Image 1 (cartoon, rainbow, N blue to C red):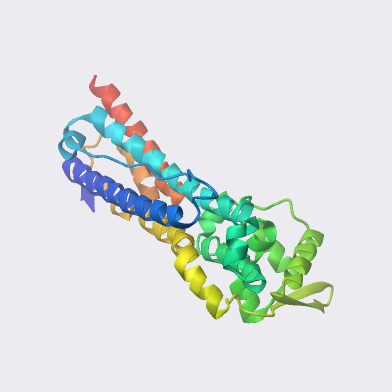
Image 2: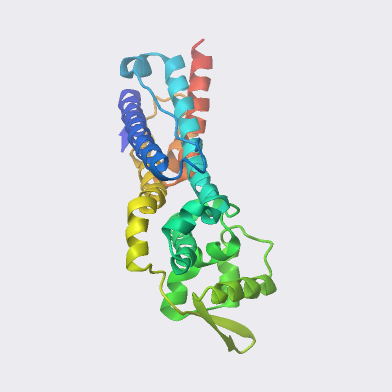
Length: 288
């Protein structure tokens, strides 16, 4: 379906307002949960900036529209860094802290390190492709392969291939075998020789004790679940997957930009707003 310039502008405004509302509500929720639990370890986590929009100015003033789009583009980047802040604080500070050790038994501590990676990186494979440094490799491995290991087991070559798909290119088979030995030492998997390869099967589920689960649900779950909810709502702008009619200036360029909005995720959303800024700058230049 083709849209007129007025219809498109209304759609863009609606999407911008939607993202403004998500940024406001989700940032408040994240900050609130963070301050209740992780603030002693990191007083200033990266947050998603607020996006203020005057609807009339957005529709009628191209300079203001560009300014709002620039703010949204920066907010898309904030979302990525917000998730990165959470992971880095968890794996670099929290898991070594007295807070963690006092709240959870030693057995639960082992499980939670894998569980957090599985909940965040396992759900957000696109994010994991962009960031596999914040979480140690052995937790990346379980986050990416837990379900397959649980269902049918996996051999070392399959594990290696799965990590290469996450853009972790520097690993060799010997590295995988070493990491899997570490995971076995934590009690998560069993290892069997299978021809020339090693086969990995699940030894125990990533389940916490009753007390550990209660503590997890009260303190960590709201933070650990936040990235998935944010990602799936904020990085979803499929309403912009429309075809501008023939009256649009630089129509081919705009069509190329909007086609990316069909795909959910950080990279396509960031691409769309970064290039919509360029589009309106070109339109503004032509009108001067």
